[in-house]
Image 1 (cartoon, rainbow, N blue to C red):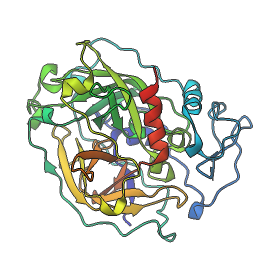
Image 2: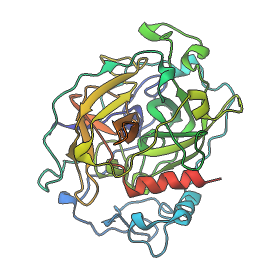
Image 3: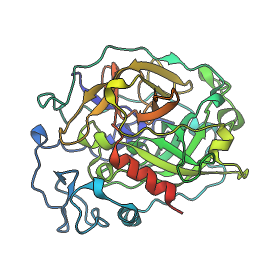
Length: 394
């Protein structure tokens, strides 16, 4: 298996690697450190968090060195995240508050403009290929441009501020079970909203559906905000990511990426009275516990590292995904051949359901250093609970 990197600007921010403009910012963020490798072979490790706290997520003992208070909000009797109810998620969220006030006209073309990122840090973990949960890497698939106009599909870009810099990711408008036809929910990667262990939620977090829909900023051209954000700039009001990502996540691929997903609830900066789904013209359902052997996956995103520039939407028709795991006790990630690079992180992975309708089955999380494949989390109970919580949250 080739070396693995975090396939996004957010990953590079967390790893302390310098980027410019959309990948980081013109000033570049300060470093955040890399994640420690998980116990070899996925075995549990005895660990006590700073401040005396410790716990287990999905049967895995939490790593040592956690900041004081990081575990606040965990149910006293919990031993398996899959057993959490709405109240448990609500309690956890109350201890890890997301605060993202709208700053009128903060995002402009200069701040959104793309630039070339630096290479990410090397990986710190090896796949668990000796445990029967990791397959050989799939054949390379070359990304192809998505036909314009982008307003005919639910993808877009996320922009955020972190540690003095700015970054971006890709994302997807998804259906809201509690508000059919009027969803304001966006699916992306966990590392696109939060750097992981020891960090805080990113600031100025927004979603721009159909980014560069007309191609006005393609080829290095400058374009007005109305061309870059034809459907508006949508600020995140609420965000949820997995507790595993908050507690364990870091700058390079490891077991935390097996739960590297996030969901945002957004609102229009210039309130039009319409929901995001109504504005975009549609939203996709999320297919949890999708049968791996029957999936034909396509990944979509805005890659920005060479040979891409972050201004165009691309797709990889990956077909049947293989498996990648750093911890055999957690659901193996989905892997497809794809040469998309940083900036594609958080972008949706789609597959047709039995009725023929497309559904989201994962999101881009990590990729190989050689840009030969991408991997995303397998969405099961924990992801479904997170969606249920943010859908019902008032």
